[in-house]
Length: 390
Image 1 (tube, one colour):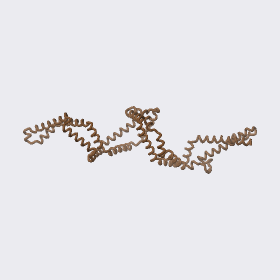
Image 2 (image 1 turned 135 degrees about the horizontal axis):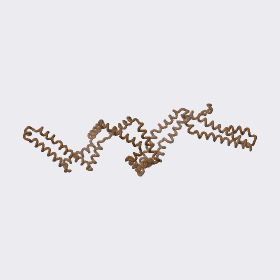
Image 3 (image 1 turned 180 degrees about the horizontal axis):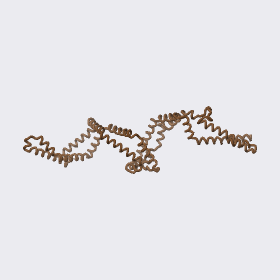
Image 4 (image 1 turned 90 degrees about the horizontal axis):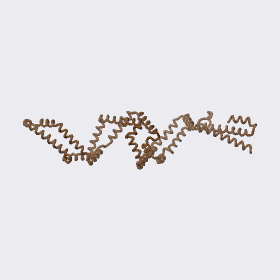
């Protein structure tokens, strides 16, 4: 515009219309310089001169950060706003569609999520993570009162008659044990018999009678489901089920057995192996999601997705849970997020803030300068025309 102004000013005498070009160039220079000054004053001192009300962003960096943080809190992180926005989202249906058809979008979402999960699992401190998982598992088991659960399971099994195979197994085990240990019974009777019984051979007869009687008793129990000893065993099981559910003393005994099992080194090794298997399985599934989705796990996920899409009550429940979780997160951590934004901006130096904002809107700033130049030139043409005709 300056070159055009010089050219038009030097040739203005050749034709009256060149006066309009001169007026356009003159006003365009003023408009361009004014917009250059205004835009530059946002980010720094024009020409390095400390003119009042320039370098606005560097001087007000902290206030901008606080204002941005308050804007986030008032418009995004209040429980009411989060609840209103979450009310419009159908999280359950979206999850159901993804699980039912995980290959949507060429599988890129699934692949990206899988890589992220695998990277997180491998990056975490496995000793610490494994210790936390195993400690949490043991803590949950210790806090579980398993005696009533065992009692309820035993009671339900007896109602359905599922305890009878157990008694049959005990009877068969007793028969095999008796056959394998006849010599022990004979030795016991022989050692405890008197000299007279040994001399007369009555100890052998007594041992045979004992073995025969036990064998007959076991055989009768095996063939007669209504045998009195079976009924006694069932009564004992029923009492055990009741005690497990109602007897504090029995529950304490079961708890002590539970704690002893958890403290046993063999149980510790089993829990360690369980964690390693679970971690290895997660890593395999994360590294190869297609293989994981092709197995039973994938079929279970697809069934879950179909259920989420077809069960309206389940969708309502899951969406309500997601909404409450988001609202609770906003209520609990909204102020913390606001402080994080404000403190982060305060921690930036002025040059960092200026550079980031200027890079973000740099192209629009150029158009502002160009538009100011053109608008100024048009105003100059109008003013020149008005001066000629007035």
